[in-house]
Image (cartoon, rainbow over all chains, first blue to last red):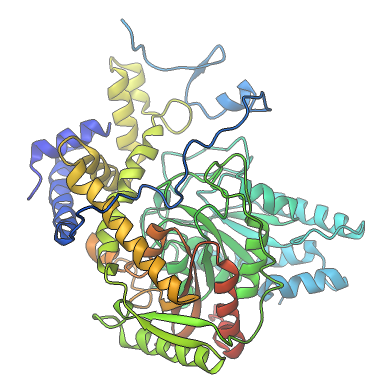
Length: 95
Length: 487
């Protein structure tokens, strides 16, 4: 089933990606082709088959809540595109 | 020429004093200067840092230290964080990003005395099979510079093949160590999930990624893995199991070893020379004492769709961290004008990511979105169970499997860039292993029209010693690995 123009724009919005008109058309076609191929999985009988999310069947790996050495504030901020007064600077998100 | 040495041969010479790490490192830096304009394996070379580490290694050796890789110059794929050396994942997004810490594998190599030469090219965020998705340039195959080196660890494989390092690290999510190793005629090992720490690797698909070594022969892979492997408290998915002596266990016979030959990995339109070379290799193993076992892994053909759904879903979640707040290039204009944070983020990501990364983020977002989760993501996870079962059953009957690494030898640069499915189909023989989470090594087993052919030895969970030994015995009985490209 081909993806529509609107579906592609919706996915891009969910993924926080601005895409151009040209990209929208191109991705619609390419993603539709790939999804058609993925439909191959529909022919596999998976009745009563449990899903595998991870190769190791582990849960809740915990450690002691102890203070350990970590990056300094300057090191943590060193790669930030914008910073101010020891903080990461972003656009206002609350009015 | 010193740059042509294997790691084990170089260690012998460093130990007997006939070579210093400084001489060896200078020889490699000169080799890089002479050949890398053609091969383009490196995104950046840290000559100064490498010479400094080499001198330090020589000093340590003169004081009687015996660290296992003391003075050995290596290259690292650029998705592996290196303190103080820019790490871009071959993405524009991370241009200028200098990690404040070393990945655990890098820290372990440094403790073992390794010298870091530089960072190698890859497909952007390790998503691709040719390095053509690098945002900077495409690496060229040393055996034929009109062809791709494979990917995504194509820069590492090409650097090893072109003698621009003694060994290298790559990462393998769906074949990204083994496929370029095959295309470039070197050895490359993907460890069992959990064998090697992922701390400090820029994550692509967290349930599939593993770092591993690429070397000129099997012995070098064993030496590198020895240093890399082991539990790391910083990666809760690394496994606390003892690391065997891989190097010490290598021996030249295969008596009593059962090698499985799954029929789904042969025929089906693959290049006839590739099949013939792998079948010849099976006979060599039989002559060394191995027993060959025919078997079937019926879910093999479903590995490709299951892999792309699962890896893209995980990638869409992992790459959500690239928002241009803590690191990476932010879309500046939006910052100055009246844009909100969502627009700033979305434009930052539009500008920073290349096409293939965007496609996979979108594919992953779609298959995880409301209404499609069960049909795609859950279904793929169920098929993953069936594929894992295929491997479990095979390893209950056999010690290892031998299969081709790729259906063809290296393809031409540009040949598959507009046909994604064709590009993806080139990985059908490597993807299943990542879904199962076990280990595999690709080694050279012949040539077709001057291009290397790779075969894989696949093993069960934490059976690295077994696959290294099968690969080593085969390598000792043949001479393919001694051939080098003319550059």
